[in-house]
Image 1 (tube, one colour):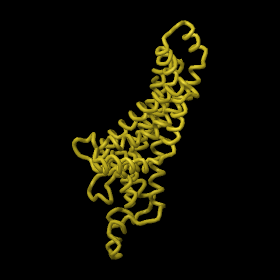
Image 2 (cartoon, one colour; image 1 turned 180 degrees about the horizontal axis):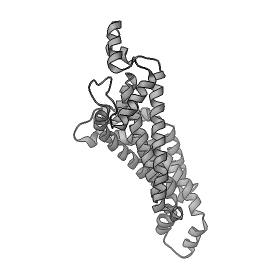
Image 3 (cartoon, one colour; image 1 turned 30 degrees about the vertical axis):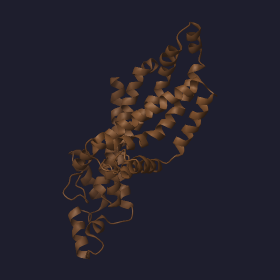
Image 4 (cartoon, one colour; image 1 turned 135 degrees about the vertical axis):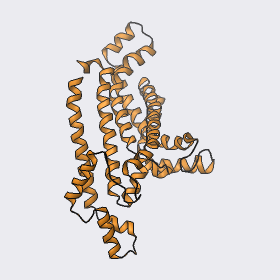
Length: 308
């Protein structure tokens, strides 16, 4: 295990370095001028030039990149262009708890809806439950998340006034139910299909047939022998989804007006806020890399063959 960690941690650092470099370069090659966006369309040339100098945008890209890396090694992600005098790290850390709550609830919806439905469909292949599940998963995978979110907002929040339309205030759970359900719905459809496929393969395996021949209860066969072997691919996808969601879900947070990391990134892209964009991408990549590492470690707990 120690050897595994010593090998993976340097790889993770290289990945994060590559992601930061790519994000920094891309934000500088896209058309647009952050100073002009900050100053406004009617600002004079001198005003724009002054903002360029204050932000260090009049220096070469190489120098700006080097200065950013030096600050990064000292734990400084820079200062936001749009949110003046606001450190990027502070702004992201304030928004992160909202994205974290949304991510956890979204993954729970994926697992609670997708896995049982997949087990039910695999247990009765070709029957009515299987056909209904196949149709439902097809709809769930095809429906765009922003469309599902707007539909839920219109019906449940606007028409029936069961949930708030937007924002984030106490009680916070009321503002997270619809966004997290929208986030988890498409993933639940995917997990239902993945669980069904793997459960069908496990149900046809010799060890399951032997367990049934020994007279084991069907509940034990499904949960102990089949589901445990299905958990490995599910664990991978759930872990990666959680890491991706923790970085901020731009579409969902924008539709529901949640001030999370995704909404912060979306606003930063609109204003070409280079430090904020780079910092948000770095946080997102960090969560994905960490969750990928934790999933690999969890494999050993689920599947003893990995330990060998």
